[in-house]
Length: 196
Image 1 (cartoon, rainbow, N blue to C red):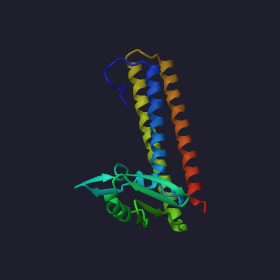
Image 2: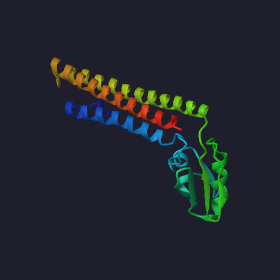
Image 3: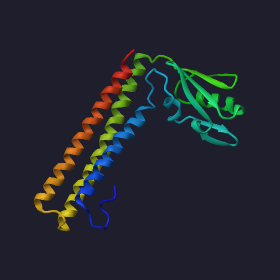
Image 4: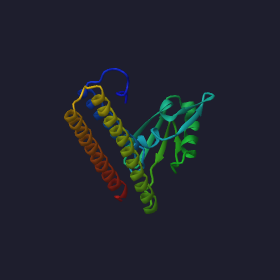
């Protein structure tokens, strides 16, 4: 957030920036959730995780060397852009900490996604809660910056005493809304993980 810069602030712009930054925290959480394994096959499972492929004398993310699709609910299909990298991609998926067992076929790699054990589901649910807490910390940081901006605008006579109070109330409402949205996403993702 950059409203604490030296330029003169507009309260409406500052409030919009607070809202956008809080929304970014929620969107980042949803992006993080896409990489959490639920027992269902999703390309994000291996695309967004740290699956690095050693090929062409360098190390690249999986999505730089292959496309991942979901032909069946419990199967991922990895199709290398260059068939000569098939073995490298298979090795990278196998060595990742995802617990997947890929098998190379003709010009593609099949990656079955096994059912999650009850213990693993509980671990994933804890991870989801932790991600939710991290997102809330980000939202609270944006709130603090918004409150600091209100004080600065009051000190610069951009806002009156009442104007500062209204601005701070608006920042708090945005904070409450974002935290509630995070909680809804966390509960929904936990349900998805715990569902057998």
